[in-house]
Length: 369
Image (cartoon, rainbow, N blue to C red; front, side):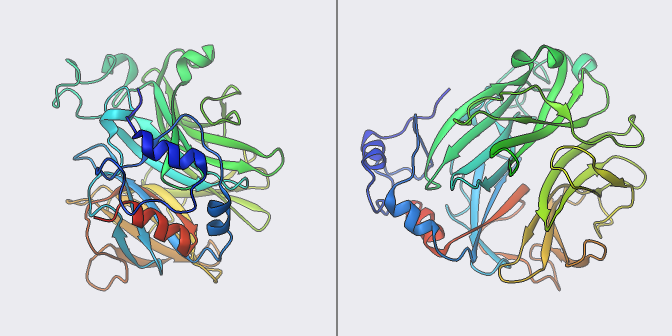
């Protein structure tokens, strides 16, 4: 299914207009779904500056929809649409809800957005008659079939595709879920690698990787397991991969004792990960959805995670320079923490990427009231 977009917005995009209107032509702030995307000269200029600003994608349980927030310093964050969704999960997912949005810039200059097609309250909201899409005893909690792929060059106009992994690959015909997809460009072949959590029926979760096609509207290779945890009976979920120097660092969640976030490393992007079963996050409550990002102009990396074990849930943060010692920064808006939000609360499963000031101003201007 596709969300509607205005003919005026599409025409302006395809014509390569240098600037976007301060407000969407239809008067309703939202991302615009289009058939194809390509970079304009203006977009390339805006992308050429220092990437000293930050963009966060996240969702909320209350809406199962997509949100963006920006920051100039990586500490103070403001939602670009005053805490309202920028794209409704109802419009872009078979289950009428999305979770786990992840955004990244590829080496080709495009932005890649991946999400889980899942509404955990679908029955309550009247979207289905059963608790889950398929029987829970056969396919497990939160079972689903699709991933959501989107691609953009300007952060406003996006292509959109549902990717039914179980239909594409017979090996996964009985898969119980397709959760928390993330993407990253493989420097060895220039292709976007997509990695996500799955399971066989209702068996323990594990993580796999595949390659998307150039249009970023499907998967082109059969997913292969990317991490072999020492105990295969332990659920492993929510991988996040970042290259630091010559080493690929994977942060992920293991439902082991204790639970929470672990780290693995490899010299290869999609194989050979050496696991460390030690918990790395400083949280005393349950946490998931790790995401690593670097502070501009420094060698300091921030490990962000979703602290779902507190009520209301919140984001937690820790910093590291050596990936051995992590300094606890606390959670958004809590006493003693430098991390602040100005106009939103209870974000879930976030991801952060660096952007230029011009890119931040463009997407903020689109949603200006």
